[in-house]
Image (cartoon, rainbow, N blue to C red; front, side, top):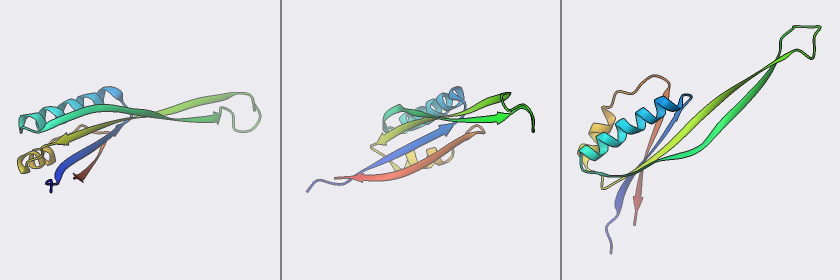
Length: 108
């Protein structure tokens, strides 16, 4: 029987692509410093939400403004995980506006 191998999958979301790339770089540097093997950052499709708002409150129906919010996403897979890797990843200081979800996966 083969031993189960642990793997960490980190999903990063942010509105600014520069901030998300800096965060991914910090996570990768931290993981590699502890001896883990890193795959990524893998860019996922950008979610674009568009909003149309009337400029006038009542009369001018044709005068409108359009806004959009772009949510950029990245995935990083870390294999050969040691307890030191998990500890160092939990102590990273991240910039504002970045959402991170961390999942522990086991593979056969």
